[in-house]
Image (tube, rainbow, N blue to C red):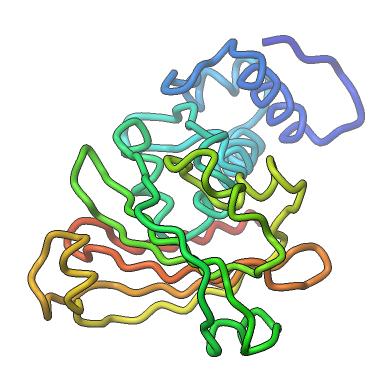
Length: 242
């Protein structure tokens, strides 16, 4: 790693240097970064800016940290921004090599409730996606997306195995989600969810309803997510540097 003396805060110098080397594949997906002690020596810095830089790299989805093991380069491109910022981030970061997804149905249909959430006519036919996400081949998440009709169905048919819808919006439409609202609740699996998650009807699961907005605060996607609660845990971490 090379770094130059400049007027940037030292944590930003550390962040920029590591981020550049990740993007340039000096460190590849799954590679371990130097330890905090090694980074202190490398950048002639104290522990605080090193931890600030690592925290920012983690929050931006470039790395993940495993307690007692260190920091590792994440599969940040296919995972997507919001995936790494939800309460399920630890699951994605831990199992990223094993996670896959597939679209099982795409239809256009009216849904007055979700149309109202999207702020469009209740008579509009929304694009409705049904998808499964697996962890090492086991179905762990069943998702339903409700999307505005002005989007092209082709956009979602190109790659039935896409992982992150926010990454898809960015790549296909140059639309970046800047805000999300998420509601989490405990529910019982109905017959459809039970079938897709290969569980029993009535089994307890987690349900997350997420609304994603573009930079103009226009809702672009409603995602209803059903998860096996014994498999994936919802964890929030808050770190404040004084």
